[in-house]
Amino acid sequence: HPETKELIMRPFRMCGFVPYGTPIVLFVLLPATAASLPLTALAQAANQSHNAAVNWSNRSATKGGDPFKDCMRGYAAAVTGALTIGLGSNMLVNRLKVSAATKMLLKRYTPFPAVACASTLNMTMMRLPEIERGIPVYPVESNQQPSSIPLGESKVAAKAAISSTAVVRATLAGCAILLPQIIYGGMEAGLGLHLAKRQA
Image 1 (tube, one colour):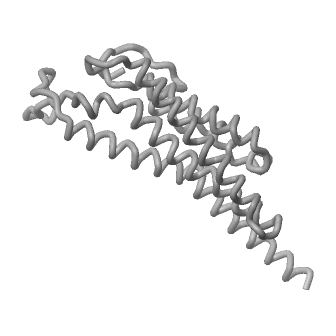
Image 2 (image 1 turned 135 degrees about the horizontal axis):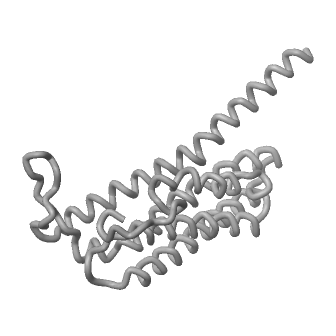
Image 3 (image 1 turned 60 degrees about the vertical axis):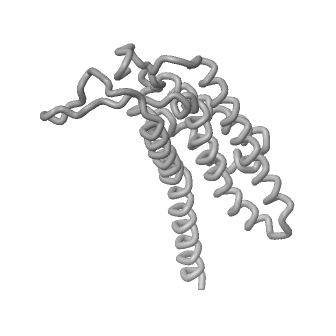
């Protein structure tokens, strides 16, 4: 940890967010998961559990508040948000008066808003006390290294840091969930067209 110097377990380091989170994301993207409400709930809960563990391990060491309570608040909000959006989207698609193939196509994209919104909500709710209290701001010395003595605490810096992190989380969700589905859909359509031409 950059502030406490405590050892962070490998799966919960920021550099481990993608490699250790990928199997969970693959579980979220499976067609069987999209077709099953219980599997969708399990996949979203597992994904937000990993996010909560990453958030807890990389939490700010700023004094004040209760870090464990903040983490649990973020986790509860994220799981609730993920399940509401994920299950709600699937139920909405099921009610559409379209073909089964179209429903399956639409269900490929329902994990993205659920994961993106819940991941952002998880991080924001957990770090809400930082917005309320502010975070330490350090002067930059001549060698471009921050000083070890803070100038004070800034709420503006906290909002900027959390906003930037939220954008990154949403972008990561898009790269891990939305982009592969678009590429896969294009490859599937291209293969279908190629087979149709060969049969003709």
